[in-house]
Image 1 (cartoon, rainbow, N blue to C red):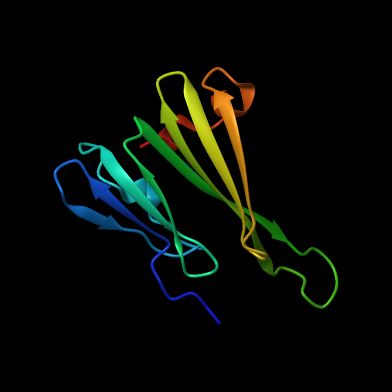
Image 2 (cartoon, one colour):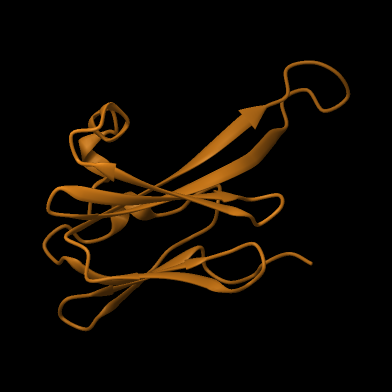
Length: 124
């Protein structure tokens, strides 16, 4: 059964809500930059939501692969969604397997090379 919910909903500090798009067009970079996110509700493959609240910054991106040979050549496969909530010196990284729905959680310091390598434009 295909998940028809928006990919995420961001409740901003002024109480307004920004509704995200789909895996192929998340609309993450369209979140207004003049308003911080208070709560992020991220849609899981099961139809439930992962809720992050009161972080200083949030980040999300989708990991995809593309078939390069065979009958599915050129097909895009959505593999993982990454949701990150950061507070002061620590970040929690949620790696969501979009095929199985399993979630790996990792806590990192903000000076971790993985976090430093992320495109700064993605932080909200």
